[in-house]
Length: 367
Image 1 (cartoon, rainbow, N blue to C red):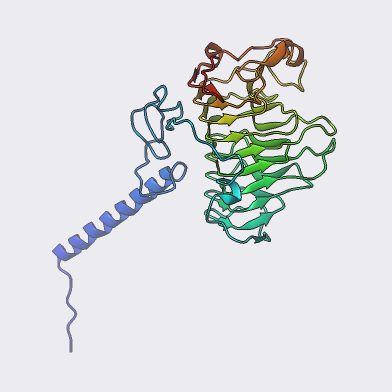
Image 2 (tube, one colour):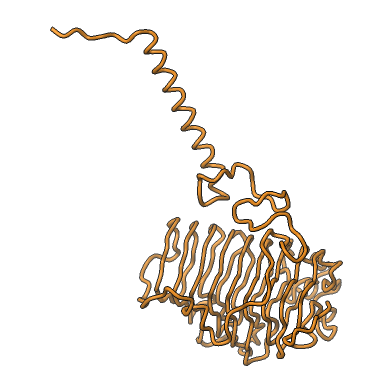
């Protein structure tokens, strides 16, 4: 008969110590994962401390730190200038490289499963509500609704890249076609290497941490019923927006602006909007922030956006002389923007900077 050997007290103590160590390790990993889930894609990165631009530490999703004039922007992104998509679109949108034959998308709407990646599809319109969702090498054309792509309030780290967002549907008083909408609570959206055309607005940005790079905005629509307010990009809320190395134009209709920055009726606080190294043709860049056009009877205007850095942009020959700079053309602000208008065109009002901006011949432009 085989006798069972009983563990010694020393062996039992060693087992207990190993068990406690494993338990503590599991709890620590879980705690780190919980801390990192909101801010990091990779839980192996030590991100227990929140990201903070200006702490002299290059945290995840930062490219430089601290901010420095001419080299590091107010949201800790590198400042470079002098390059943007080609005029024929040969290096952006579906021509960015790596795209294949497309088929019609037939999956769920909204796309809500975290980590989803979709390529080479034709969308009639789509919403993104999950985290870390990427769509590339695709077309978006919604001819019935107001938006072709919607980044919902619950979305974090959505990416739309190497795609074409366009619209040729009819306009009406109940439908004003727009390309892509980043909602108020959406965070860390990336819009890179896309072509936008045929819409009232290419992108409407209200979210936080939106990066817009190497896109081509051209041939927007205007007119219609009611008369459209056509912009390449319209930002009416949100903060930490980085707009870099995009081409605006040509436009074959009268545009409102290449980029309009103006709080909507609820007067959200807008801050840290960096415009770096873009080519702006057609109408230029306008900051009009004295309230909201629709709410013309406002007794108090909204607060001016702050921390706006306008660096290294080139204004093409078609840019309107009155709209090249940050002001409001022809002094129409008091007429259109309420009873207590604010002029947010100056550096002092914005709390930001204007530097290195030139016309298409390279001549410096002062604010």
